[in-house]
Amino acid sequence: MHGTSSALSVVLPTRDRPEQLARAVASLQRSLRPGDELIVVGSASSQPVAVEQARVIEVQVPGASRARNVGWRAAANDLVAFVDDDVWVDTSWAASVAAAFDDPSVAFVTGRVEMPPGVEHVRPVALLQKERPYRIDLSTRTGDLGHSANLAVRRSVLEKVGGFDELLGAGGRFRAAEDLDLMDRILAAGLVGRYEPTALAWHEQWRSKPELVRLDWAYGTGMGVRITKLARSDRRRARRELFDAMWSFGLRTVPHDAMRLYRFLTLTALSRVGGTLVGMARGLSVAVVDGHLVPRSARRRR
View 1 (cartoon, rainbow, N blue to C red):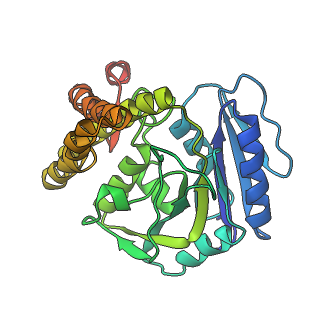
View 2 (view 1 turned 135 degrees about the vertical axis):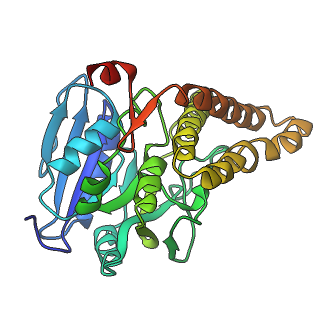
View 3 (view 1 turned 60 degrees about the vertical axis):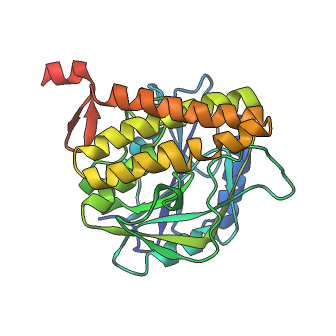
């Protein structure tokens, strides 16, 4: 038995970004309500994580998905929210997230993620800027699902699907798509989610152009693995996601950008597409057990 039905446990994984962490924590502390809790999980950080007015858990093995799993399993409340350390939230964020779960059919909630005010960026990362709420189900496309940077899930649902796949996500073997994969498995279990625009957060756009190219390769790799994983249970949806990855979010803009000599945008799109193909090839060689990717070493131990 955990805390009150509307209280949040917020899990914030972090690794060696103390200034960003301090801002994220400050915004959360302004937003959280009595009964809510903040759990900061240090993911193999080089220095101990020091945060006041929060539970701190240190994990020695890197990986954002591993850190999130450790965090939600330690949570005191039935509603578990996840925020990244390069994100800060609105003062009404916690109340908005909790209110979205007033509908008992909602298994998870994704929130609005905006660019920081006054910031311009050639290649924004991990935004979702829809103005109206909507139901998330098996028909929802990847671009409308949301991000683990601003996500909340019922603890019972996390237990049902086994939480995040620890081979996916930053610091893992396959460096992205852990949030999409989690939502894939929740939706496959017959559950639904909700996008709630009043649960507002801002995502710092801190990466340089070379870092963004590498990030798009990582995003593509994770997406490719996610697609091969999805194909084992829902081939029709996997084909749709492959089309979106290769065309809608990949090759569709390349002729336009190349003709106008937008070298950076052309390179990021090609990096994403190339990463997707490599990820699919790598994903085919990894087993899936109980909805999670299993490395060969673990398979031998079984």
